[in-house]
Image (cartoon, rainbow, N blue to C red; front, side):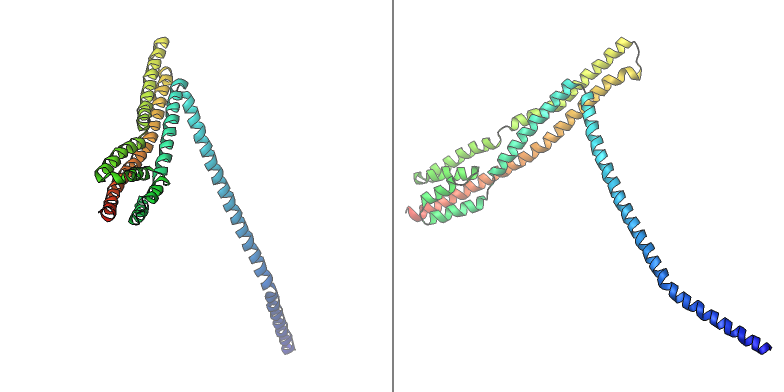
Length: 278
């Protein structure tokens, strides 16, 4: 009897174990699916958080830009409308002249080496009129100088040289046009700022005299006007000075190009004279 009972108990344990194994195998895919779904949900949540963080950063940057613009506007108004308006006018006119010079000088730049090669090719064939047409149809001071030299090619090399040098001086003056006005606005901007500083100090002392007290609240208004006008005046002068130095570098480059091209043109004309005017 005991053996029968033990056998039945053993069979029951084996059956229970098999059922547990089967149930575990059936539940494993379900657990994997749930895990995948949870992982996908976590990835989606992380992506949503990243997008939200990027939106927050973009909004903060936009708010900072708006805040900076608003701050500049407020400080400009606080800096005494009269003097701040004069500083703004100096900046506008100075920048306008700088932009005009930069555009003019950029249009004056050409490939002078190619121009001289075309002139030399035309003169080697004895085509003086073709060389003149090449110079006439090319923009810039280098082409204008070459054209003036080509106009006097039949009058001798000395005449050509004097013509080129004289017309080169005229072109150099054209390149430096309006630079004196830019330097004027560069000098005026901080001067207006310092003038506003002096006026602000006078205003501060007037407020002290009226109040009969030297408290910070009495002096703060005039001191604020003094410092703000000075800051804006210096900023405008620095901006214009950067543009001015850039313009000077382009003028120097063009002057060097004109001198080199003039020497090369004289050499080309001398070769033409030796070949066709023996």
